[in-house]
Image (spheres, rainbow, N blue to C red):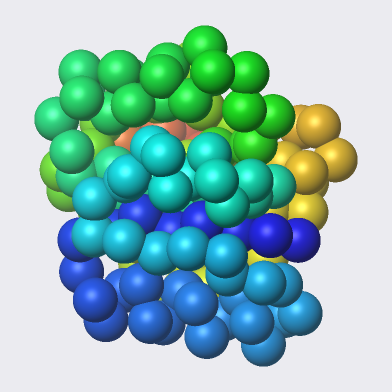
Length: 139
């Protein structure tokens, strides 16, 4: 799978790149800020976008990718303390956490198979209503 990574933290990009390469994927581009011409030129199967951008900017970026008919799938990779919503044009949401690495590749595979994937474990742990109601539920 060909993947483009956009994250402003160099160490996050490096860790993600190593995880993906180790899993047999090719990183075809990486940048602190998404460069749309570079992305379109690279023709990735999947784009991983940092979710720390302003939500409207993130939505605009994703919309711009979609209107150019770029067939790539899009995952928002977000800091759970700063990101609260998922734009409907994204294919997935994964929170940046210590254990996200073990969920990342399976999530990508499901997204590439046509599913939308949301990191429910992380969402439930952060929402008091869900945490109490589903404390015994395994995800």
